[in-house]
Image 1: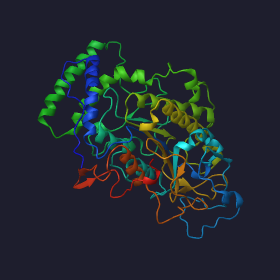
Image 2: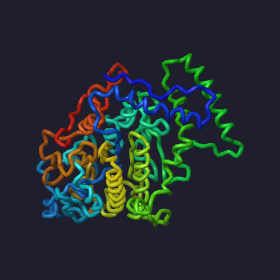
Image 3: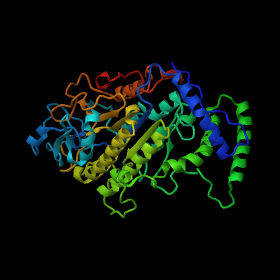
Image 4: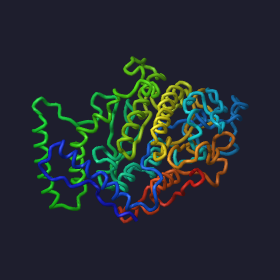
Length: 481
């Protein structure tokens, strides 16, 4: 069992932002060395990127090609068993509105809307037999993000932050890049620390906003660098005195650390988030060569490309500067017109633009990390809360399908160009129903690559030794290189 220690240095009072940032930086190497002592085996990776498609992206319209749906398109759907639909999505069989073609040496069939990922497909391991526990967005999102389908549990990034600490103490260990339109189901609870120390929660960053990190810098005219430093020093003295009287309360310690980190980030974050110095060819690769353009009110591909691409480029800059876990979201919570992957009404209308934006930014991130030598120790996970049905809803849409969907992994120690687990001929349930893949297996595999035995990373809470994988989980050894 990991007995997690705090890795951040205990800064004394009287330090300004510059001095504190310098001091924290000096401790970052020592902190990383201390984190290494908690590992259960040599790590294969240092960093993780989780791409989360909020609203339930359709495996059938992106990368789980089903010729039988093309053959029987429009015919009455017959699943051969009782089907519990979420709404009324048991219309005729429906082929994808998008064309599929083979890509890479592996010949993987991909939809035209994710064609940019064709260049990277031989680095990706697809898991097409994922199963969930519910067709309700909030519960299913919790399950994928935290390992439990109810609130009150830490996000995966929080567990990683808690276990391994920081690589660079001038930046957060766990950064979240939400959709620019708003949060997905559950909002910040998806990346909360829950019963872990509060300092392990995700830090939300909105790179497309003028003020990407709320309350990081003072905006009042009377605030100066000297007064800011003096205020922090006084706050530090008061908090330390309070903490000495209440040593068991992690909330104050987390608040102190947040001020320390904020002082360091006042110098480091603006530079990390500033993409203006990136070469033109890099900006173009991420789809940012027309940034700032005006967009129509309808969902459209150029807008999705720009906003998702900006998050992916920001993620690369954060990763190369030592952020350990980055979570990127596509899609906000339910609303109309759709701005998420919950395509009950029209798959082509919603999935087309969202997928093109996601694929452009994700392909650029993979290629960029690879050419910089960072992909070999960075793992990318693509996920969503569940899939969509092979039968129609409203003629052109698809209902929820928690019975099978797709995840994929790419990067450090992952065997590319392979598929682990297939869905059945319709894409309705796993082909081998007795041996599906669950989110616990994905989480166990990621922790394994980080050097952590998922059964040993536990925290006692309410009398139970809690862990990310609950009482489940198997490492997917078949996809490890």
